[in-house]
Amino acid sequence: MVELSELEHDALVEIFNIGVGQAAAAMSGIVGEEVTMSVPSITFLSRMEAAQLLEDAHRRSGIGSGRDAGERICGVSQHYEGAFQTEAILMFPEDKSLEIVRLMVGESVPLAELSEMEQEAMSEIGNIILNSCVGTLANIFQHELHGSLPVYQVGSSDEILDATGSRAETVVMMLHIDFILEKHQIHGYVAFILDVTALHDLKDQIDRYLARAMGQQ
Amino acid sequence: MPNPIVLIVDDSRVSRLVTRQHIIARHADWTVVEAGTGEEALAKAPELQPQLVLLDVNMPGMGGVAAAEQMRKLLPTAHISLLTANVQEATRKRAHDLGIGFMEKPVTEERIARLIAPLEG
Image (tube, rainbow over all chains, first blue to last red; front, top):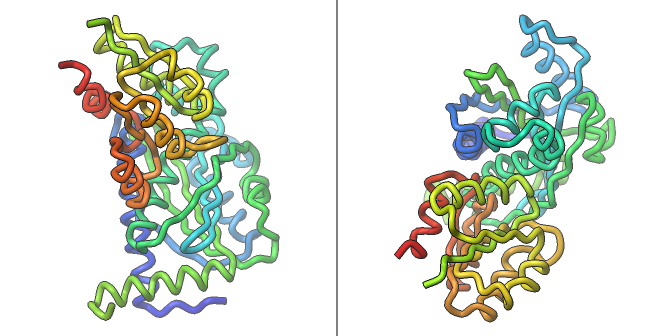
């Protein structure tokens, strides 16, 4: 397990916070309305626990809307390499994805065509939001991050995390961010999964950033 | 002068659709042509002779930056710009080094207005 000092932890949250701000602006540009994002919370846990955490968060956001607890999630993931390696995943409730695509393309596109392009449109939304966030991190770390093309997946939170290829016992850093489109009652999540090696690389980047910030480099 | 021709290069159909919508909303008489890859765009460009080429960066195949580099040679006088979610400084610098524009995604009315402004005279 990688131990972060209080200062490192604080820097990590702040850096992701800036990235998330950029992603919120991107999301707002897509849907044409204000998007509220929570301050990221960072937890270190196993991949199985990560799936459980997502499931619980998902269930909480479904309270009062009459949705089933076991409903499926639509996930878009991208693999990044460079300053550190991570799987970044954007997740929405599956039943909201068509609504989001509608907000993106406007009212003029017929429903049949909209359904046909749903998967492709969600991939592009994931691409824009994840790149906005990761790109900001790369700029702060002054180190490029290369991203794969987005992969779209529908399933339970466990299945979505399985698709990223991380093993069940792997320790992961879950960076959990809620974002809310108030007018449409949509909650989504962004999660970054890093294994132990990637966490060490990330810690290095944070330390360099802190040294620069304090004028030591 | 004939009406401008715009070439949109993006693997995302929905991004092409939204970009096209914003252009046509302002100029219904312009010709807007789409390509899903850099390779397809380079094949279409010589005959099409677009005045404006908008390229996504992360695409299957050669990608937008390599396509833009070749596009610049094929179309020395055209306006060429990246239109991408890749907001990293490294990507902006590549655009700058190639002498082409850079615009962040998501595609919005205001961003498209800025991209097509040079063609509006």
